[in-house]
Amino acid sequence: MAPRTLRASERTPASWKNGTGVTTEVAVHPEGAGTGDFAWRVSVADVADSGPFSTFDGVDRIITLVDGPGMVLTVDGTPHVVDAPYEPFAFPGDAVTECRLLNGPIVDFNVMVRRGGTTARVRIERSDTSVRPDAGTRVLVVVLEGTALLHGASVRLGRLDAVLLSDEDPVDTIGVDGVLAVVDLVGEPGH
Image (cartoon, rainbow, N blue to C red; front, side):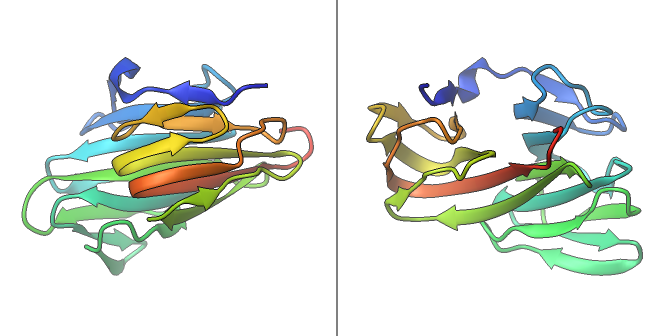
């Protein structure tokens, strides 16, 4: 198989589940799933105003600041400052979550997985890295800043472009001139 390239220029923005913001889906499984029936979903959101986050019952989330001054996320009454770029922050999607922007709009990177079906891990890479998915695992690589080159597939990725790899793909290394988010998505049997 060949890695699946997902270009930022080909994505269509959509309203958040709660209608108060805009998100752009990078990838979802199963393909075509909506906000209520995905096993996992990865997106980029433009956050222009403070306010509540959408609630996702039975979902775990990992959010990473990409651009902007940051935010305070109050998750079930506990505030968390998320103001350092490229530092993933995990929280339950079914928690009552309020966002207070620190000093203007932000862009964030979101990973959501259905609890009991899929687990996710987000790591940030700033130099060349090897990506070889384990059996039953998919790996989504997203360029958060700069560019990347998939050596095995000779595919160049720009900002917010992504590539989805399965355990059948032959890619060995990714050349990095910037910052990558590498998302390991491990499905449970039947997912």
